[in-house]
Length: 220
Image (cartoon, rainbow, N blue to C red):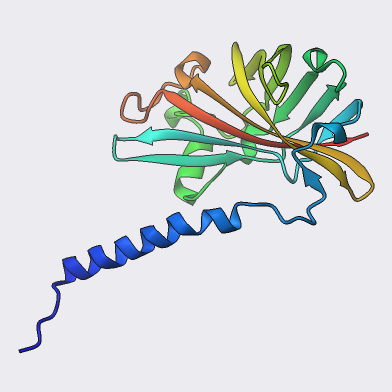
């Protein structure tokens, strides 16, 4: 008699095959194409004042939801300036503005909740319907030994509260695109939302917020 694997076993086999495929693929697709205009080459960076590319700069945030899973959203349309001199990277300065009102999540209901007014005239659970833009202004840059990584210390103003925040920044690439010199960076930081007066749902929704920043700047 022919035997059939139970559904759970079939699911496990399919999951295992998928995991093997996912593990194998990144080594092939993670590499940028050789023809890409940008490359992780510091010699391509030129001194000057750069403007954030709002179409390719974003702040990705993540919180823990009820201990079951992480939940992620995005702030986009980031604007700002970067003053940069490759001969004196420690003197770099960055100021960016983040339109909180344009927050994006995978759930229309959650996005609405983040931006809804407080009930019966009370304080909103999160940002409220017309939140002020967030703003980060650097105050100091500390480079590592090879100059590829840095700690950018500055002040973050969010929800009307200003707190010091440190960004761990990696140089991603530089080059010319569309006639403009462009530089790109990756950065990470961790904040506590309660420090900025956003305490709703703690600890069911984590106080800790992990930030991942993908930033592109075009020379002016």
